[in-house]
Amino acid sequence: MPGLVIVGAQWGDEGKGKVTDLLAERADAIVRFQGGNNAGHTIVRDGEEFKFHLIPSGILYPDKTCVIGNGVVLDPRILLGEIDGLRRRGVDMSNLKISANAHLIMPYHVLLDTAGEVKLGKLSLGTTRRGIGPCYADKALRLGIRVQDLLDEKILRTKIRVALEPKQQALRELGVQRRKLRKEAGEGDREAAEQAIEDAPDPRLDLHTMTEEHVSFGHRLEPHIADTSRLCWDVLDAGRTVIFEGAQATLLDLDHGTYPFVTSSNPIAGAATIGAGIGPADIDEVWGVAKAYATRVGAGPFPTELEDDQGRHMLERGHEYGTTTGRERRCGWIDLVALRYAVRLNRMTSLAITKLDVLSGIGPLKVAVRYRSREGATLDTFPYHQSILHGAEPEYEELPGFDADIDGCRSETELPAEARAYLDYIADFVGVPIRLVGVGPGREQVVWRD
Ligand code: IMP
Image 1 (cartoon, rainbow, N blue to C red):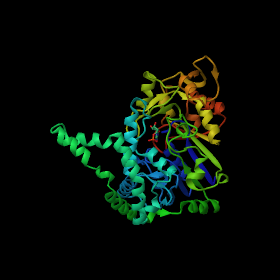
Image 2 (tube, protein in one colour):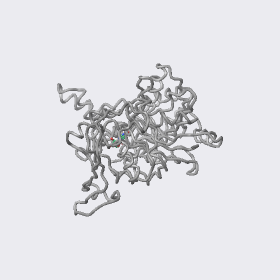
Image 3 (tube, helix red, strand yellow):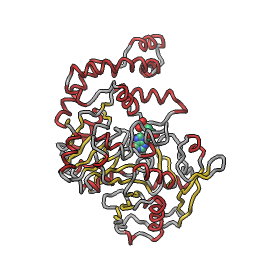
Image 4 (cartoon, protein in one colour):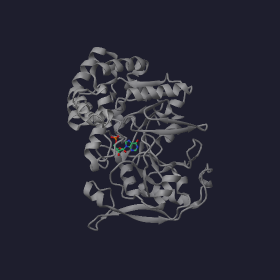
C-alpha cells in the first residue's frame, strides 16, 4: 500500500483521526492535503486524550514523518499553539514538515469569515469561522500569503499590504469594526463612542503589527518548512508507505458536496494529488471512513436527520459535539444513497465503519436506501440538483438491532449476529468491503475484518 488516501465518506467527524492513527503504524509518512483548523480530531492513546486541528494524526509516532501539505490553509498562531502543547506533553516535533507553498490564514480572513456569516443571517452556512473560505478565496485570487513568505520580511510586508487593502474596505462595509468598537465603548457616551468607531482602526488589521508578528512566527516555524512534495516522492519511490489524510469529508467537498453548504476545499481522494504534490498513479488504496449512523454540523441538507429520541440517543451516546467549535452535531440514520455516491467519487477500495457501539439499544436499525422526491419520483442516486436534494425524503430498510454492549468486542465473531448483518448489508449495498469497525473511542476498540 505505498500510497493510501483516507477520506471522510459523510459530512465529517467520522473518526478519520483514529483510522489514520491505526493505519499509520504501517506507514512512513502521514500527509494532510487540504482544509485547515476547521478540522479537529481526537486520539486516545493509553487513556490520554490528544486533540489536533492541523497536525497530522501520525505525530504521536516518534519515527514517522508528518507533513502539512501545500493544499492546507494554516493559521500560524494555531499551529504554533499545537506544537507548543504537544512539546509540553513530551511529543517530539522534529518530524513535522510544513510545505513552503501552504497558504496562511491571516487575521483578516478570520474577521471576514465571521462578518460574512453575520451578514448572511438566516442564510448563513454555519462555517467554523476559522477563516477557511476567505483564505482559499485569496489563494484563487493570487492574493494569498504563503508559508515561504514568512521568511522574507520585505516580501511579506508587500504581500500583506496588497492583500489587506481590499479587506479593510470589505470589513468596513460589513460594519465589523463598528460593531466591535461600539461594544467596547459601551453605551455611556454614545457620541464619543461613535467618533472613536469612525477614527480607530482595528489593531488586528495594522500592517506593521501584522508583519512583525508574522516574521516572528516565521522564525519559529522555519525548522519545519520543507519541500514536502519531494519528501513524499522520496518515500514513495523507495516503496514505502505514505498516508494522505483528508480533513472534512466528501459531502462537504466544494465541487461535489452539498454546495453551498460545503467547505472551501476538496476533501475527496483525487485532491490528495494536488494538495500533496503527487501523481494519480501514486495512489494505490482509498479508505473511506463513515460512522455507523450519520452526523452533520452547520447548515445544509441532511435527508436522514432525526429530531427525536433516537437522534438524541446518538448525540448523547456518541458525544456528538464538534471538536473545533463545541457545537451539537445533527444526527440521523446512515444514508446509503449518499454513501454509495461517496464510494464512487473517491473510488474507495475499503471502508472503515466507526462508532457501531452507539447503535446498541436503539433497534430496529434503519438504513436509507433511496429517496422520494417532492413530486413522488424515486431517486436511487444522490441528486445533483440542490432543490431536489432539499426536498428528498429518505426511504428506509429496517434491520434488526442489537442490545448488547459491544465496546469490548475485538473480533468479528464476538459481535452480535445483528451487528454483523448490519455491516454486511452496508458493504453489499455500496460494493466495498468493510475492513475495520470502531466499537469505542479507545485505540484498541476496533474489530479488523480482513
Ligand atoms: P468552513 O470549512 O469553516 O468554511 O465551514 C463550512 C462547512 O463545513 C460548515 O457547515 C462546517 O460546519 C463544516 N465543516 C468544516 N470543517 C468541518 C469538520 O472538520 N467536521 C465537520 N464539519 C466541518
